[in-house]
Amino acid sequence: MLTYTGVIKVKGNEQKVSDRFRKREFVLTDNSPSYPQTILFQLTQDRCSLLDNAKLGDEITVHFQLKGREWKNPQGEIKFFNSLDVFKIENSKSSSSSENISEPSFNNETLVPTPDDDLPF
Image (cartoon, rainbow, N blue to C red; front, side, top):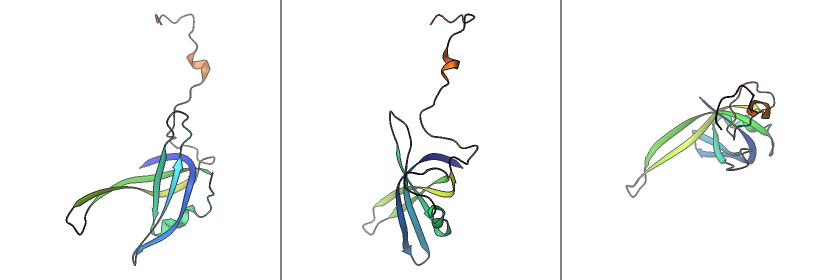
């Protein structure tokens, strides 16, 4: 299980792909000032409704699995696809233990050298 915390940038509508498969895509961005990431996730089947109460700009934590598959097109070419399939969404303010994928933040007090510090730099 993987987790990611980000802000909802795009919230797509549910799409009926076939008679037995439906999906809903959405995009999260993180708060990284140096290299912000824009990540596409998907919800499938009954999980499409997990995003109903979320709004653009909300910060959420998603629990997901990385999935990949191989597909052969009508011309005989083999293509490979990856998807990030979400199975749980939490409001990040209420989640107590979630991994936040962004640049680490440090408490300045922990970076101040003490007189006992014998490092040369």
